[in-house]
Image (cartoon, rainbow, N blue to C red; front, side, top):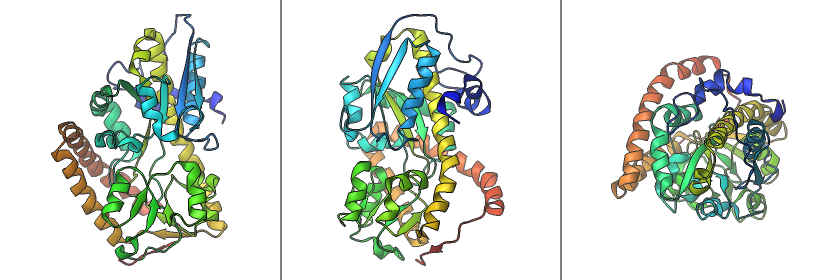
Length: 378
């Protein structure tokens, strides 16, 4: 189905209604429906993405936003998205919105934890919330208000802008059979996952998508994680790495975010503000649906082409979980804002895990087939 066919009726159906219900700070609700825009004011904005145009699902969220916003406002409010590097470097999107070089951005907030480590909670933390659990926390569990306070320090309004779902563990040119195999490994892995990996002896690096393939090819890195089968196949990682590990314990539900310069947002008519929120919510739903639809066939193709699937050894994940807990506590100890968000996030995770562990996992453990693989022993 083409994006333009993802109609207002579909948005206000079960998926969209669930996402739009209970949004704080004036978010549209399911009962409101799409905003009925009465103004004829012409507005033209630019949006800087961190992602390349070839990544049609993750970059495509900005295109969905643009298309739906134009339709909702009768063409009067247009946002033109630009791929990473065309307006600003991919890893400078947040700053470009903060200083209003552009009015909007689309990125993963864990790229910017150097500015404030609490930004990780706007995207994902290791052993954290899945995509559905994250949406529950943000839209209905108070997470939105906490994150809005965080982004106020950057003069930015944040809007959820998609989620990849639980990611794969990445591409490796060496086997990981035990915890010791991680020591000295050069790996592209951003965010808090990179911090955890560093504590486990990995040389963690942050690279934009366009630099991963050549770095693997020439041996500058030994391993790299990106997203999952669909995007990874597009980027050709199976051509330069043999082993495909899972699960991506550091990214159980990484959320993408639309950044809106607060001054630019405040200058909009109220109807345009509501239309923007509605279009962003649709883009959020759409990205998750696209990945869940596209990843299965892509994984099959990768395996057919000779990729070797491996599960991380329990010893690696157990150590990672221990390091993650300690790192979260250390970050919270010296940052009151971090502590406030972390405690709320942790409570939401405990509630979600208890429920999902009963209903979802009870069903999945029985019904879901597992692709044949080999796991390490320690």
